[in-house]
Image (cartoon, rainbow, N blue to C red):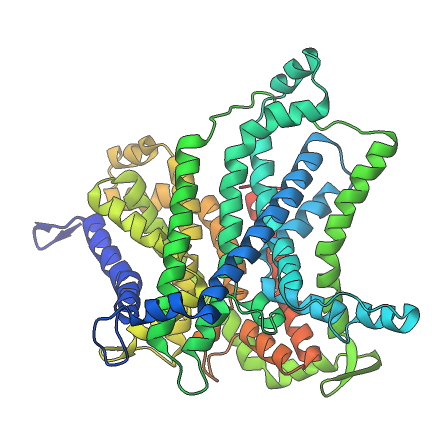
Length: 550
């Protein structure tokens, strides 16, 4: 690139601009958060907020509750996800395509919609609760509190374990299993002594990700907690208090969460980098046909788990078609709930798709440029850029919302109350996903392809756009579609940033559930579920894959 005889390195400009943007919109807000955490109400440096947290049982108990919920959720998710992956990989299971689809939908659907589904099912006036109370005089266990939160979080996190485990099992060579069989190992010994040690590091890394998801979830405990306060809810309450809140104390709580999630992320990186086994499956595991009672039991277990995943989604869709009179359901079915949301909530629906499309466009452009810099032009600056761009991966959504509010609530960057800050939050939260998929596909593209274009007369810039960028499209699109699904379902950050004009569907669903307007909430949730399904089908069509693997 030449300007009046001066040679300008295009990629140097991209690097400088990228570092500037990441520093402004990621590092600066995070530094504002840490600065606020160590200031008292007069703005003087102090540890008073951390002392308050450590000395008041109400506050530190919230951390212990978060850790207990996340730990139990992770254990249950590993048991369910790993066993389901093992059974569906090693044995032939009917309807495996639908099973994979339902598992992925469960993973990509926001946990708070799962919480809402179980309120409709087993809440005080839920379908199941009412059925058992009227017909059998049986009162079902409460869906609210610790048990309900763990149930919903387990159903939303076990798919992560399932996908990681299934991906690892596909790399196990069948000859290893055959060798174990020839030495007299029965299936249980094979699994315990050979398969589990091979896939153990992958499962453990996935478990840490599941733990982080459960630890940072806001919507589920907010809807089901009823006095069972966990850290994300405590941060929200402290920041958005009725009397103006305590933003500095909320910042201190956020710093504690950031340090915990960062530590977990470092552990996960260590496991993947140092403890993983390099496996090359020349002959992948071939699924065997089970017979008799064992076959029945395996299918019953798998279908039972999938039923727990599918029923809440079905109940939401079913509820959206029930006739309503205000917040009360009446006999029969109608489209009144859909007519209501399209008449009165058209703006949040439009905002959801417009904000998401704009955010995805920005994410795609940034991911392609940053991936190229970090893969093709490795140096200290690009490595720093890579770490900075991936930083939001370990930040809870509610913390990102608070950092943006603290950083951009005055001149020269007054973004509070605008649609821009909503889009910015989406970009920051989901950039790491598309960036990783872009980097992965770029590692598979030989630099010689670009060098050949340059040798034929193209400039390095033209060679990138004409050759490399086009070849990156499959990986970029796959990551972008998954980022898109998570953006339209985003609640943790947007619930702190929205205004009356910038509300999205997830925010409105949350508000309508709080107000007990279940018809409108179910209709909006059904639209999100349908969008998720369509996005997945589009992903399978464009990539040619039949399933998503990690």
